[in-house]
Each structure stands twice: as structure tokens, then as C-alpha cells.
Length: 255
Image 1 (cartoon, rainbow, N blue to C red):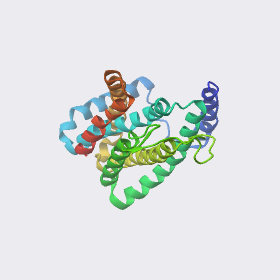
Image 2: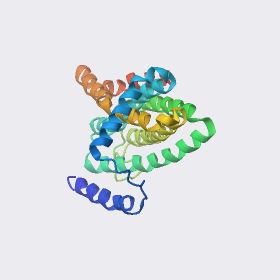
Image 3: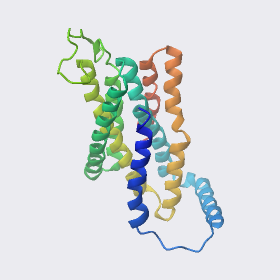
């Protein structure tokens, strides 16, 4: 399991080089690093002070920070919930991660189609709604229950499809459900950037994208922290995961 970290580092280093070597950059301005930082901070501060004048964009940034935090917490804690619920080990978690990564790529493609077809705002609303509904459905799975109400008795051989992993129906259905979550989350990530590019003032695009990134990163611990807190208070991973709705639903409403 530990070797996965160095492998990822080598992979990132190798595939970063095409960007550094072959992607053209803007010509140098001659401005020193210190001057550029001061100028950028002044422009950012001025944009923050002017946010009340850009109510639509400001509301969107707040909404995005909330639902984005909820979606990120879903990705981070979904595997932890599955490991605790189904007693998965390293190999099962590896297969889980690879499967979600593949379907997440499809989510980016789907997000582009949804953006072109329905518009950025509607595409985001659909992805938040889908994530919320599918998350609730996924929490209805455990080794002896399917979607909250169906009682499941594992077969004697405990391998319904002859797979090396995910040997019971609750596990298989859970994987099917969370792949849809991966698709909806990645679609929202893609549509969110497009949405800001469409509604931010062109002359302040750089500053708003800076605030966009800052707002997301500054509260990224909240939803994950809520999962930890609710899990501790109620002694239940399911209760912890339900706390993510406190971020998805307000984000949806603000949108």
C-alpha cells in the first residue's frame, strides 16, 4: 500500500514535463516578483470590497463553495464509509478507487454535454440534485440491507458473481451507485468553472477566479469535519455521511 505514494509522485513528475516544456507562456513583463504580488493583492482586495456590486457572481461563489465542499467530502469519505461498512481491505479499496476514477472521467464528458445542452446553471443544479439523491441511496446499503428496506442474506459461498472482489449483492449495488456519484461530482466540477467564466465581469475575471479558488479551499475542511463530528456524536458512519446534506442542499438552494 505504501508504494502507491511514490508511484503517484513519479507519475505526476513525468506527465508534468510536457506542460513545462511545450506549453507556450505569456511574455515576461519585467515586473519583479514582489511587485507582482503586491499588485495582485491590491487588486484582489479591491475586488473583495466591490463584491456587493456583483451580487449574482458573489452569491454563486458562496453557493459553489458549499456544494463543492459537500461533493469533495462525499468523494473523500465514501471509500471510508464503504471500508467500515463492508470491511474492505487494501485490494478492494484499490479496485474501488480505480473504478470511480474511470467513471469520473465520463462525468467530465457528460458535464460538457450538459453545459452545452441545458446551460451551466441548470447543469449544476442537476448534478447537485443527482449527488444528493444518489448519496442518500448509497447510505441505504450495508452487508445485510439493500436500499434501506430489502433484507439480504448472503449466500453460503458469499460470491454471487464469481468476482475476486465485491462478492455480495449489497457491495455490487453500492459500487454501481457510487459510480453515478463520481459522474455527477466530476460534471459539477467542470460546469462550475464554466459558470463563473460566463457570469464574472470580463475585466475582473482573474480576481474572481482567485476568489473562486480561495473560497473553496478556505472551507474545504468543513464538510469533512462535519462528517467526523456527526460520526463521533452518533457513533455511526451513516449519520456522519448524512451531514454532507447540510452543504449540498444549501448550495442547491443558493444556485
